[in-house]
Amino acid sequence: MEKRVPKQPASRRLHDNAAYLSERLGVDKSFDVIRLDVEYGGRAMALFMIDGFVKDDMLHYLMEYLSGLEEHELKNHPLEKLLKTHLPYVEIGQTDDLEEAAAAVLAGPTALVVDGVEHIILIDARTYPVRGPEEPDTERVVRGARDGFVETIVFNTALIRRRVRDPSLRMEYVQVARRSKTDICICYIEEIADPELVRRVRESIAAIDTDGLVMAEKTVEEFVSGRHWNPYPVVRYTERPDTAAAHLYEGHVLVIVDGSPSVMITPATFWHHLQHAEEYRNKPIVGAYLRLVRFLAVWASVFLLPLWYLFMTEPELLPGALQFLGKANLGDIPLFAQLLMIEVGMDMLRMAAIHTPSSLATALGLVAALMIGGIAVEVGLFSNEVILYFSVAAIGTFATPSYEMSLANRLVRIALLILSGLFGLFGYVLGIAVWIIALARMSSFGIPYLWPFIPFSYRGMRDVLIRSPMPLKNRRPAILHPRDPDR
Image (cartoon, rainbow, N blue to C red; front, side, top):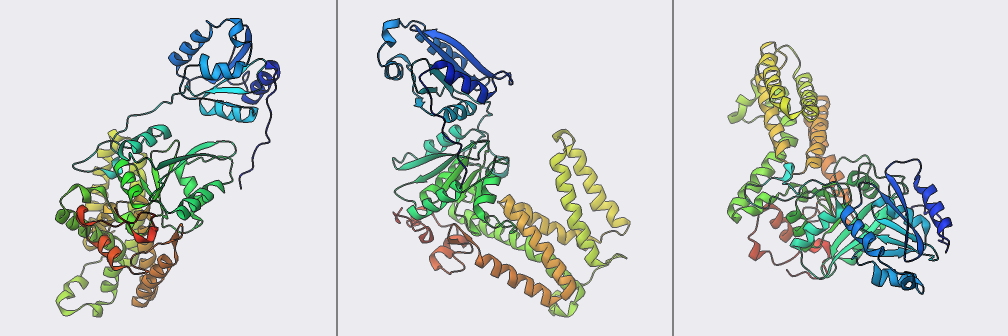
């Protein structure tokens, strides 16, 4: 469990409280930590805030309001009068722990220390630098909503509330990590989600013990998944509020991490990573066709290249009508080496594209096309067939909706290729068998990873393979054990 900082009780003396907060926050060492000593209603006070996190106009309004106080107005029960009468603001609270007050200031709220009061008043008049809720690049749709999650947790919860106006929607707030104190929200619909699932998610997040969540949701995933060397993701990421809302209505639990535009959907099976909002933005028959094409593309990205290598090295495996697939001019370099080289080369191009400024992206694409499409073939580095079949596999990789799933499938493809090169057909079949067994043994927060294929569920598998019309989807996924199974 996370180690807690010992509580530091506040005193009634302003000097003691202000001195502790000044030392803890490093007022004299950090230019953006502000301490403002003031006097209102005949009482000495101190304001602690972070420059850049404070709504200046709101704080100026409150200070102007306080400046009109008379001494007798704060003579008796000053804390109660300030909270209920003289600080007209919605988000206001109190704490008697100076450590909690210091942590709150670093998160954005302003701390008001009042002489003679052994509580610190917290005024949540904060604002963050934030971009607009634009459509995410990785989950675009032809027709549909264009808003997407941003890096501010409050904005993201508002985008979800806009779509889920259920009174039982719950947003549980926790802080994780001893030093970064990252804000995390656990979101679910109480009347739908399984209480046991909510408990699992809550406890897995509470068990995170680290200094800081430097990579936000990805660091959280590594702590809660428990499978550090398994490339397959056990949570699904989305940057679309409509996708997140749809999963809430199924009984999933969302994890929203401040500083990240990606929301984690838990639990997530293998098939969740193959779904896309575009399928539900079209008529059911069109969506079913798009889903089928996507499945074919994903399977091709995993199995096609190693299978073609087998046909090239063992032509007797091909039936008579497909003998043409085993005929190719492979050049001087061994086929196995060509396939490994082009796999590594494609990843090099992908990394280069990420690090290339957008203004130079076109130039990079031209260089890649000339190197791989033309010159590499002419000099005999690759054969035309290698480029053709690898291109089909690469298209399948890019057609995979989940970026994490596409990377995991790419590693499986390379492993199958190596096994096929070393052991032939036996290695190919063995690799597929080990892959399926490994996936079948996985689980995501207690949910089998390959459900509804293993264990098999006819109704669930039908919904996976076929994009059913929404009026006919009147039951929630049984594997999630929803409290209200009917839609």
